[in-house]
Structure formats: structure tokens, C-alpha cells
Length: 409
Image (tube, rainbow, N blue to C red):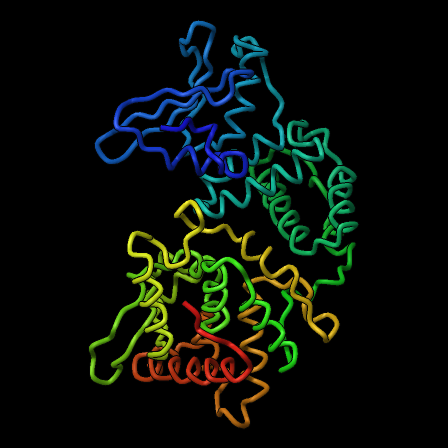
């Protein structure tokens, strides 16, 4: 079996590669010989146990650093280096509280999901660690330290990154105040309001027929079959990118009930962003369902409908990259264009055509799986939700085909 550190994906996402490894017997592997970081994977009754260790010369582990399910690879590296520099940490007294200590204390209290924690860790590494303030005692941090990060993000015109940074910083700030760890806030409220971004209107989208035709032509020309088909389904259904990337044959179901008879995409609530709505059911046109089933038939050994070359799930960055070269004729519409833009594109065009398609705003919200805002929505959903979604997607699919879309296999 190839060593973990030699896996192609390891450099980009080491934690995912580590947790995906499932040896038959207990196995120890050195992840980094320079800092002596090792991982021990032990099969247990209901899965595997992953533990990071510091290894001394001679191959004997001398320090347990933590469970991989609770700390990620980068945190294990830091602890490894820290232990090598000070193998007797008990001699250190009254260690000052750092921003990293605060961040590590938050997941248990906030009950972050694995996906959310992964995102927070990325923000922490690229913002707080990158700017060198992660291990600074919070008592020594000033408003200017956070202002420098905000300024750097603003210079790159990264509106989304700025909001993520501010939310995490504000969460840590609130925790410190609530725990009486600091006498005054880490930064002033003016931090958030200081900058204006050109992209503050959010995701890009397509608003007219000419740009839609150009977008469809771009998607149809993509060389990767999986990426092309995934983006085709994304454009037709406006599914969120996470559901799009992880969709399998098991998600495609034929509803036998007489009133709602037809094909559906069914996604369990634990896979949905808005879990309060329960399981998501998206009634789809038969033509679309047959296309998806044919894709599954052509790759019987694949788990996912749109697998990457390693037979796993594509990362979001791959889809973003595929859309990066798309440019709309109407200036501004292609700005920050991602798979999420398909949702705004469908909403915009379907609403603009409401005089001819007779589709109401609420009908589009049901297709997009937005959070329910009205109590009486439950009664409507039970009786007409399935048919409404199928009607919306049938009209939208026909409109896309009229403008050049092909359901290629």
C-alpha cells in the first residue's frame, strides 16, 4: 500500500487522506521525518482510531499529540515542533492565552460540524497564522493587528474572505469577553464597516439570453466528462455545489405514488445545508432522470455520478476552475462566477420570464431548497410541492435546450 505522504492528494488535503486510510492491522507511519511526526492507525470495533505521535530516534513513540478526529494535521505538526523544543512542558508555568488557544477551545462549545470546522481551520491558517498573530498572547493583541489582515484582504478585493475572517475573529472576540479572559475587546466594531468591496453584491450570475448561450457553450466544450456533466446538472437543477459533487445513483429515485408519480432526486436532511426543512425531494423531468441513469450505467464501478480521476469526489475548486475562463458579454455578470451562480442565474431568468411561464417566486424557492419562511408553507408543500418543482424544472430545462444545452453522456 502506498504511504500516506506519497498520496497525490496529501499535499492539498492531508487530513482527508489520513482519515480515509483504513489498514487491516494496526499500522504506524512517519508523516514527516524532519519533525518526527507519525500517525498510528488502529482498527477498532466500529471503525478506526487515528492518533498523532512524536517519535524519538529508534522508532519509539514518546509523546501522544492527539486524536486525528479532534485535531488536524497542521495542529499536530505544531504540537510536534513544540514538544521537540520543550520536551518537559510541565516546567512552563502560567502559559499566556493565545489566539490559537481560543480557536481550539471553540469547536466543543460551538458544536461545529466537520465541514464547518474544516472551513474555520482554513481561515485560521490563511489569515491568523499567515499574518503571524496566531500564537501571540491575546493580552498583547491590538486593533491594528486585525486591521492589517482586513487591509490585506481588501487589497485583494476578496469580499467573501473578508466576511469569513471577520466572523471568526468576532466569534473569538465574543468568547474571550464572555469568559472574562480580556478586559477590553480585541478590535473595534468599526473593523467590519471600514471597507467597501466591488463584489459585495455576492455571486456572479447570467441575466440575459446571449450570455446564457455563451455559458452553455462554455460548459459543453469542457474536456472533462465528469466536470461537464456535473455542471450541466448544476445548471439544470440549481443544486448546491456540495450536493452536486456528492450525488450518487442512490439519490435518483422513481416515486411510485399515483399523485406524485415520476422521477426525483432525494437528498437526506443531514446532507443538506438547511437541515430544518427535512429531507429534500426535487421532482425532475423524465428526460433528465434518464440521462442521469445512463451516466450511471456507463460507469458501474463508480460510487459517484461525477467522480474525479481518483474515483472520489471533486473539490469545489475544480468546478470553480472550470468556470474561470467563462466571460459574459454584459460586463459584470461573470464576476465571481461559481457553481453557486447557477442558482442565481435560474432565479433571475425564470423570474424575468414569469409573464410567459406563470412561475411564482415561491415556486423557485422550493426548487432552491431555501429555508421556509411561512408556517402555512407546510400545508402547501404536502399537497403540491412535488408537482410544482417538476413544472419549474421542466420549463427551465426546455429553455436551456432552446439555447444550446445538450444532455451528453
